[in-house]
Length: 349
Ligand code: 13P
Ligand code: SF4
Image (cartoon, rainbow, N blue to C red; front, side):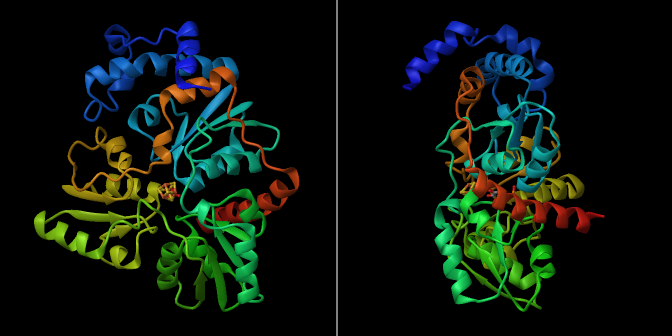
């Protein structure tokens, strides 16, 4: 459907013109993002936020939003926010009929795999991921043939078919523990070569072999960028995601999953921090932590940024963007995802 038709259809059902009055009425929500969202922009967003929050109730829907969502989504309409592992666990706990996944397609697929009877909507089917696109189930079979008997630990940033072909999933927050828990000397990690190389350093007792995938957002940074940045802005804490190269991670004060990064900044409250990850991460905590100055480049994930308020409203209005996974594939993929969740719960207890 052309965007203009969508816009017209939405405008005929909801009051969506910019409204400084509504923006003022919804000040409690705006207070969570006023350092990063200008008042005229909030006047544009507020009618969408109001419409989505009302429609959510009508549809008995919840919005699960990844930490990379923009502030108006993260603070305005999300019921739960988190990293990939937290969102997967939350998907097993929600009571609603409909889950709207504000994130990328593999996250919505994971929610569907864990909740076959629920309707899971993704506001833009094109919200992909360079890692998920880098490998197929045949690629997993190729790795198994190359390393017979080695278990396959697959990052959740993959399609359901790839998960179904794997022994267990992992996320950036549990990858090292999961690899350490595998039987045998050799562990296959797919598809992120940098996550695998970072994990290999943390688990020296295992021989970790990997697929050649990478994240287009995190691979852009080099160790030289970080060194130059430290020289230019001394005293800055450098905080990375493990999808960065091992050389970049080696330059960091801390490396962790997106929620690990947020927890670290909340705990340490550095005077200046550079988050070597997606740009919305800093925006989403800027108001909670006014004492921290976020510095450094703004690197956007083009896939995550496909999710907008208008598309969320459209998905809920038209109930379009339903994610389906072939039941046999879903059943096998569920085993890999649930094994990860069970082990993560065991590690946490
Ligand atoms: P997290 O699991 O750390 O949220 O990472 C997901 C992701 O896509 C990072 O690029
Ligand atoms: Fe995929 Fe990288 Fe975007 Fe995360 S940031 S969704 S890994 S492309």
